[in-house]
Image (cartoon, rainbow, N blue to C red; front, side, top):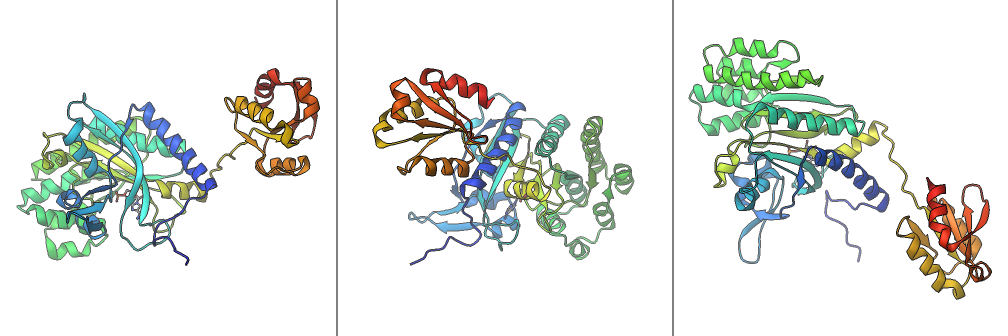
Amino acid sequence: MKVVKPRGTRDFPPRQMYERNHVGQMIESLFVRYNYQEILFPTLEHSQLFMIKSGEEIGEHMYVFKDKGGRDVCLRPEATASVCRMFVDSLQDLKKPIKVYYNCPMFRYERPQKGRYREFWQMGVELLGSGGCEADFETIYLACKSMEALGLEFTLEMGHIGVLRNLMADMGLDERVQDKVIYYLDAGEEDKLVDLVGEQTILDLVKLEGSDGILEKAGDVLEGYARAQKTIGELSDVVGLLDAQGVEYTINLGMGRGLEYYTGIVFEMRVEGLGAENQVCGGGRYDGLIELFGGPPTPAVGFAFGFDRVLDAMKEQGVVFPEREVDVLVAPVNRGVWADAFEIVSGLREDFVVEIDLLNRKLGRILDHGNDLGARFAVIVGPKDLSLGEVTLRDMSSGDQNTVRIKDLVEELSERLG
Ligand code: AMP
């Protein structure tokens, strides 16, 4: 009986895993240089964690089920709620700001298509405990630098949920209506706003999109709404810092995010060549979430890369992945030398990627296999050489061979492999 994998999930063969790990390590090394530390949280969470504030969109797409004890649990659909729960549980005593990152699979029961999976990986950061524009800036800047490090062309779009929420609060719209407005904006259903709120100022604000003069225009639209106007100031502070670093962006004051917990700046990054699912990164500020989970008021900001889409984008944009390298193939010429060959292999594996023939093949076949592997050198272990304390070292690309004393082998290989 053939059992297939669930729809929207994928297997990753070795070559793909090699590429994924390579890209993951590049991003991770940047996160680490920004002084982020890795964390992990459960794949399984109580459904309630995401029902509280992650929003309708996530709620609809969650994998929820009852465990054997009758509890409502789910496969995590995103990281931020888990990180906030974890902060309340165990991170509160750490010195602030707390900077953490993760790289793990998320699950959403969506209609699978190119770039949209039911199991997909997110790699992201959360910066907990700073409410300032400098934290917003550093987070956004890190996202941009990560894209650059991978050689990806991208666009950055920023909005500010707080401007819209403050405006709506000043107009007396309750939080439920506010959430709905933001949901419609995220879903690209602006037309529904007219019936829902009808207020011209809101409709004018969410249309403001572009690069030059948008914040000034917003200031005019928000005339008379002091709180919302002040919030525009927060956005211009971040923009000022991004300008100083030469980061390019557009501003979209009608940007909603599917996740309901955002309170401040929000941003998305897109890339060319991925079709409809071209958003590779989403993030923003969520100052109220930790408190909502029973923690002390703690401002926070973060982002997540859709890791699968980042990889797809690199392929689309022609970024070349390095080949995996096998440095040495060890070829025992007969069973009689196996013990010595395995000892040599064990020594070489301290420094190099080494394969040894495990199919008891003839020398010619072993060398063919070495070519298939792309091995740079073969070490041929035969009884005559061994009796002199030597092996034969063969350069697989030129075919040149010479004998080398076993005790000098590591040094010789180090030199020749560079
Ligand atoms: P979100 O948590 O919805 O803000 O998503 C953050 C990022 O995760 C998005 O920008 C996408 O790149 C990625 N993403 C979200 N949903 C999926 C999915 N179903 N399949 C693949 N990537 C996804």
